[in-house]
Image 1: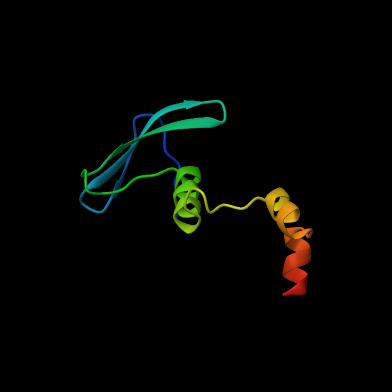
Image 2: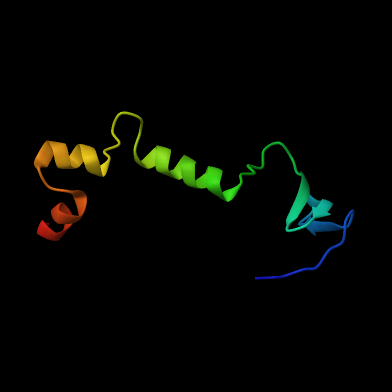
Length: 83
């Protein structure tokens, strides 16, 4: 992992097409501007996790542990141990 220190208004170039600009530093938060071609997908990690989760368990197929307990009488952890 490359770790860089930057001040406000300084830039980081990723390849030929992507530019990160430090827009503002305030306390423990940093605002970053991203300039990239429209065909490059840019997501915050938490949104990427939600996308992955949604693709693994499409709407209507998600089962919460309480639903599983009602259906089988056993929680998910009990079911995993039994498998």
